[in-house]
Image (cartoon, rainbow, N blue to C red; front, side, top):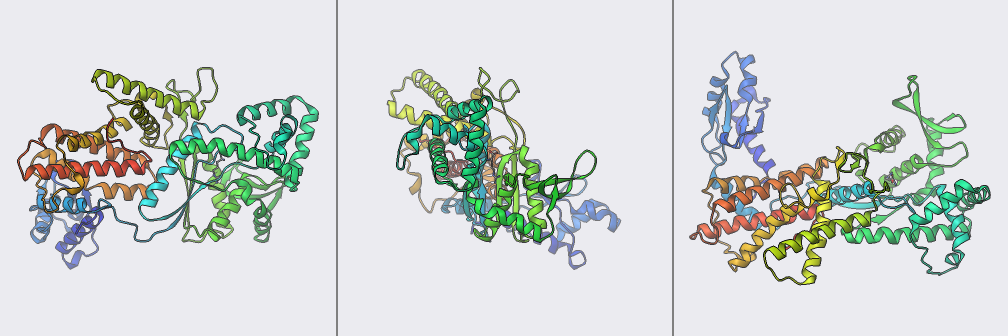
Length: 585
Ligand code: ARG
C-alpha cells in the first residue's frame, strides 16, 4: 500500500480538519514541510491564523487541536513548538513500510497521471543549412528531458522538430547549388554536397557581392513558392543534407524526435489569414496584413501589430506558428503544447498565443506553454565563442567533453593501477562526457543564462553528472564485492531504520514521486537534478557511517535494500534526464 506524498498530505490535512470540529470546517490547516528535520516532517500553522478571530493564544488553540487530533497510524504523538506550531513526525514504521512498498514497485512509487493527456513537445528545431549551435543544444537537451518525464508519467507525448526548412534564404542556397553542384540535382543522385554551413557562407557571400546572383536568388524563391519542380528538388537536396548532419547529433545524444518542419504548414497558411479576416481581427498596416495586439505597445503607446502576411504577399514565422497551433489542436488533438526555445522568443509566443486565443482556436481544455531558457555564456561571461571568435560547433563541443572525460579516466586508471580495455575506456568516456554536457545544462535553472565550463561539468565533486554516476557505481561496487544480486534480495526481508543517516536517506527516497510530479507540472528539470544530487549526498553520508556488507542480519539486508533503492532511484532519475548510468567507471 504505497501512498504518494500527496496522498499522505491529504490524509494529514483531513485528520487536522476533523480535529477542528464542524465549526471550522472550511479552515485551512496550513500544512507545510518543516524547514528543519529536528521538528519532524510537517508542521501545521493553523493555530496562529486562528488566534485573532478566536481571540485566544495560539499555543492554547494548538493544544486544543492536538487533543482532538488522531494521526496515530502515521505519526508519533504531535508536539507543539514555538508560538504554536503543531509538529508532525512520521513514525519510523510508517517510513519502513513505505520504503518496502517502494522497493517492490517497478515504478518506485511514482504514479501514472490520473488523466493522461496528449502532449506535444516542440523542441530542438534547428534551421536548415545552419549549424546546430549551443542554443539549439539547450532546447534539445531540455526538451528531451521534459518529454521523457511526461512520457514516464503516462502522457501521450508527440515530440516535434519544428525545423526552419522554409524561407527566402533558400533562394540563394538553391542558386548556389545549381552553379556549383548541378549533378546533385539529377533524380536519384546521392552526391554529398559536404558541409552545409560552409555552403551557406559561400552562398551568402555571393548574394552580398554579386547582383546577378542576387537576382537569380530572388527568382529561385518565387519558383520554390510556386512549386516549380527543379526548385523543389534543389530544396529537398539541401534539407536532406542538413537532416543527415542533425541526425548524427541526435543519435549521439540518444534523442528521438519527429521532424515536422515549417514547410509542412505551407498549404495551411492562406487559410489562417483568411479566417482571421472573417473574424474581423485582420487589419491592413503599411501594406501588410496584421492583427493589432492587446498589451503590446510601441514607445508612443500604440498597439503593436503582429504581421501575418507581408506586403509582398508572403507569410512568416508567426503565420506558420498560428497554422501549427490549429493543426496540433484539431488534427493531433493536443491538450498541452510545450515550446522550448530561448527566452528571446518569449514575445513571439505570447503574441501568437494571444492571436490564436482571440480567434477562438484554443479551447479552454488546451494549454499552450512557452518554456524559455537563458543564453549560453563562456567562462568569461561573454557569449559562448571559440577562441577565434566563431560560434562553437556542436560536434566539436561534444568531442571535447568526451576527450576530457577520457583524459580524466585514463589518469584515474593509471593512479589506481587498473587494467582496462580500450572498449571500456571509450564507452565510459562517451557516456560521462555526453552525460556531463546534458547534466550541466539541466541542473541550472533554465531561465538563467548559463556558463559553459568543461572543468565544472566534469568535476567528480559537486552537482555534476560524474558525481551522480559515481554514487550509482558505488552501489554496484557493493553488489560486486558482496556478490549480491539486488534483484533477488529476500522478498520477506524488512527495512529497519535506526541510524540518523538511514532515516535521512529514507525520507529523501520517499520524495521521489513528488519531485517527478512537480517537474511534470512546472517543467523545471533542475529540481530533479537537485533531488538526485541530495540523494547522492545522503547516500554517501549513510554509506560512510553505516557498515553494510559487514553488518549483522537483519540489518545487513535492510541496508542492502536501502542501497538498492538509492541506485534504482538514481538510475530512473538520470534516465529521465536522458543520462545513462554505468556499472563501473
Ligand atoms: N527554428 C526556430 C529557431 O531556431 C525555433 C522554432 C521553435 N518552434 C516553433 N514552433 N516556433 O529559432
